[in-house]
Amino acid sequence: MPEPEGQELQDKLGAIWYVMDQYQRDVEQWHDQKRKLKEKKEYLEMNGTTSKVITSVVVLFALFYLLLGFFTRDFSSFFMIVLLSVFYLLMRKTHEKLAKASLIILALTVIQTAKIFVQGIMSGNLGAYLILALLIPLTVFAIRMGLRGNQSYIDKYNEHVRQYNEPYLQKMIQLQADGAKQDKALKELTNGWFPSAYLSPNVVLTFIDYMKKKRATTMKELANLYEMDKLYARQRQMTQEIIDSNRNINNQLRFSNMIGMCQIIQMDNIKDFVRRYW
Image (cartoon, rainbow, N blue to C red; front, side, top):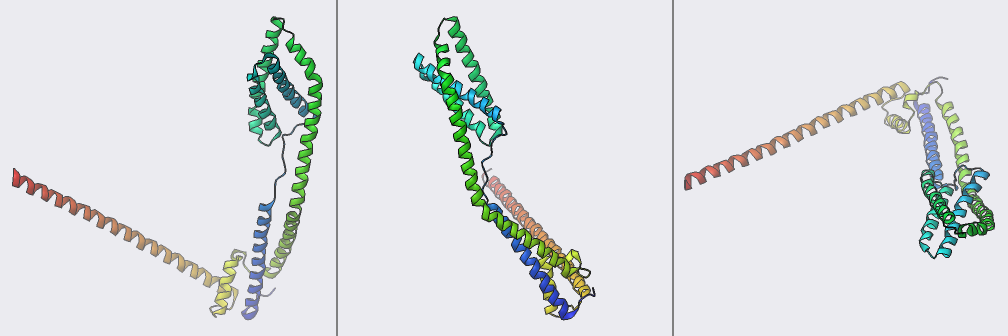
């Protein structure tokens, strides 16, 4: 297409800036919507069998130490119940590294439990076997209720998050669709005559300002004028940096001279003192 000039060029630049400004606003809105999204509850990747086995072991040991405390009147075993509860919660939450680290707790619990069983067998104490007999129905019940309640909580929370996120996700989809339209419109406006290197809202605004001030009338003149102004601004910045550097050097020299004068005065004072009293 022929390259626009004069008023036509200024009008097209205005249209380009409008499309780019609207696109930038939509991008900012998209990121704003994304920040408002809530995250769903994430859990460790465990299939049904693995989850039931881990839960069974944790509940089994916790109940064992609970009943053992009642039988032996040694309530220090409740500390193990607390540790097992922490382990179970960590295994169900998102902190996978903490969950793996807490496997040490389970290993220590297994060792401690095995020690109790061995001591019970060697001493002829049947209390450990009685505890296990009581644990079988309780463990099955606890596993079923715990898994069911836990999964129900997960599902309810995730459904709440899904409903909360729905309007934001729809808005993000709409903004993406608008962005695609704006990108297409921008390509149609700039196709064949506008250099992609200058496709920036600030640069386009600068071009419009040039045209309003009658400093240029064609795209080539706009580009050359922009490059000259940019070069001049860079030279002015470098000049200012040199001036600031020289000013700092002068200040440092002035300070050094002041220090030198103070040292000379101190030396003179010392000489006068020595002459007067020695």
